[in-house]
Image (cartoon, rainbow, N blue to C red; front, top):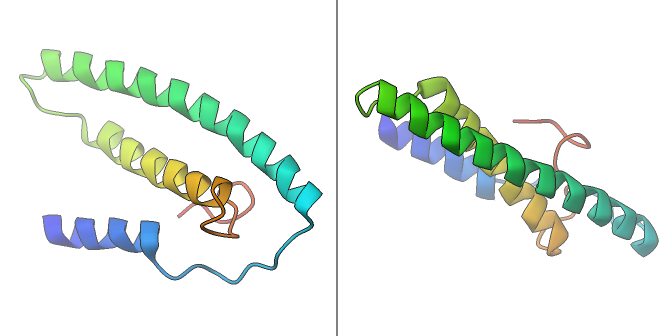
Amino acid sequence: MRQDQDDRLEGRLHGEQPPAAREALWLRLVHMVLIALMLSVAQTILTLATIMQFVLMLLGRGEPNAQLADFGTDLGVWIAKAARFQTGASEVKPWPWTELD
């Protein structure tokens, strides 16, 4: 079961990118600034989720909360996609411009 999850995650991170047209450079800059702000918010959310998961693990005898762990995976995928756009590795913008998979 774990291998299926790893394969799914690998596909979400490095799978085939949907076709995306190149946009004007000034428009890319606008998107990059907006995504940079969203990455800052995502970092805060990740910190809060980390603290929550640790507290829940303290209370639950070391067992992580599955929903929070899945949320962390989804957040990590979004951050990776945002980073790929920010660094020019991909022309595909992350959610909310594309589907959140």
